[in-house]
Image (cartoon, rainbow, N blue to C red; front, side):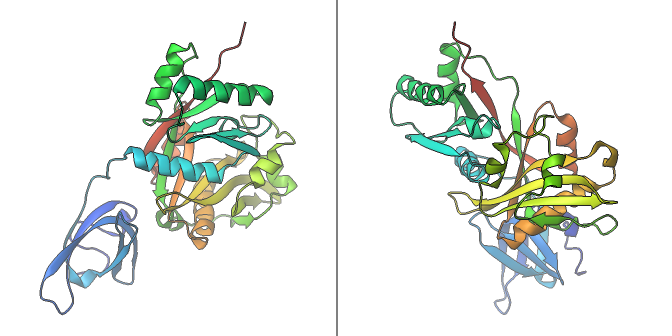
Length: 327
């Protein structure tokens, strides 16, 4: 049996969910492992099970193997990833109403200035929403919820009845294995530099929603540990940037969140996006991350297509609800 191919899977399936039947050494019988194909090195497959454990299988011991459909995402998975994402992009001020996380950061980014309902608020919805409204009103911010699907369905129904406008768009949370992205590192373009503080060129290259960054942006961008600011320069000019932050989910999974990805218009279609993601994935892997997430607004079909080509798949969605103007 060849070391670079086993039955119906190959190294190109790294990052996909597989089932592998293999012979146990010196036991005369076979067993199965179901999980994600993490790496394939020197004739050995490494499969990570759902419980986080990794099984090393020699290709020579494999009896049969195949790719299987992804495990369905359940509410617990959504809560875990959103909790990790909250740690990767933190507000400057927070509070809690039971299992709801209230965040404020001077209005910079919707994520850092919205309430994230991860679990029960511990009080009736009307009372919880009123508490959220008071908290944001005191800070001169429009009360806003970031509502993950499907765990925010009850809140959505309440806000509908209360006359809050419907969400303008969905945001897709897309995920991929760190190892698969790191393996895409290229050598034919400039290397990716990752610093723990963004320099002036990095800040100048990143435009939030097409605008220059406000003064409050820097403390928000820096408010994670560990955090890295990736850059690619060509001919002395900053042509691509991204931010990476590593945080832990309640289920023990360690995530790399990649945000603030921007490539200069004149430098697009050169593979810099793939290089940038590979470089920040290597940085995240060195800090223990096993998985990567990105967030893409649904109207950005081009961005979604790029991430899909890199191996990302949809995990779940969320949307924002803002209180209507008061008359």
